[in-house]
Length: 134
Length: 273
Ligand code: FES
Image (tube, rainbow over all chains, first blue to last red; front, side):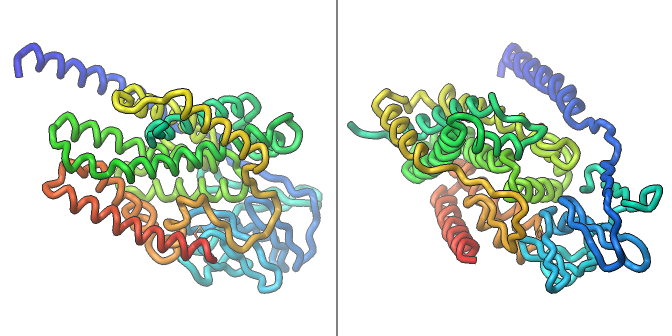
């Protein structure tokens, strides 16, 4: 390789790398976004539950329990089957108890529990879904 | 008239890209599912344009596979370095094409699309070292919604077009007869047959992903995600791109063929569920 060719090659690499870094930083930056808060304006008696898109909210004698519907295998939305009180994942058939405990299938981990607190005045709940974990 | 497979692939890509840009005029990445349903329900000719984009893209991928099948022995008797390099670069458009179709499924954002998106994101994150960066570049849906999926879907049009024509077209052309017959046949088909979409609120016990993903979906039931979802699908891509460089290129053909058989079997099992 002549000196000239070498310089051209080095120049191309320099331009490439010089552009790659700004692109990389631009794309990798995560803007801060607050967790998603979802208000449920419904009172539930112990034993009753509510099925939302991202989670299931159960009222128990010990208070409300919000179970995330994101499968802990690869993130599909699990479906609740009331007859057996289980969650079944439609993607690779993982199974969980109603309260999120793992039963069988490739997931291996329990479903996540989400933060939930009763709304002021007692009629309803506030559920918090963290970003990136939903 | 002798129809050239490369010409048909190009034709299907052109129709898919153009109909895709038509859809983009009414598509809204902040409310992906709602805007897709709106196309189906209220926008004049919405079902037709969506169907044309869907089926032209399916056809593009199938024709691409067929094209590879017809030309797979090319590297065996083209052993010059420039030829080898050309083959490797152009073979890389295959994973791009698959990803373009895959992001298309995600963008309609029905139950299949959402779940497929989550699975892909989790699988990417399992890639050692680069997983996080790859996810930020290609999907990142749990943080960013489907903005990036949409950006990549459109970017892929340019990449496929650029590599497939400007780089590759020195050998293959697209002439009017091929293009017109393809266009007319597809339009007729799509005027009658709609593109699929899942309706909301069905408690289905089994969701089947896109057809080219079924084999992986089946394997994910049994094997750890990194093996089933990353390593295994990489085998044929690695084998085909490396084909001309292998000391015995035929070995690469055998690997690809055997892999294809295993994948066909898995797909069959999954589709019979
Ligand atoms: S994502 Fe639920 S079982 Fe795989």
